[in-house]
Image (cartoon, rainbow, N blue to C red):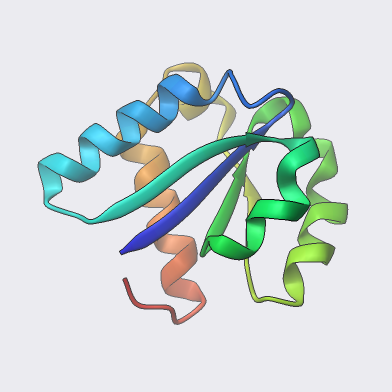
Length: 107
């Protein structure tokens, strides 16, 4: 199972993207756990996931959040702004799976 965390400023703007990613995963027959949280909830949740994707509005926080997550081997990366804006769940799902694969973590 792929465990993917999306993080944005309030946790709300990513909810539609989460739904689109879940729909894409279902079409592919992939088991996923995808959830959205606000940046203030990062510390309590990132350890439960294999990757954290940041909404463009908090991209500036990547360095600090990645430093925290490094101790657990959880990659933190910003979502492509166009994919985010166009709600391309397929592209964002592909990006998340690619980051997880780079860590050598299996689903």
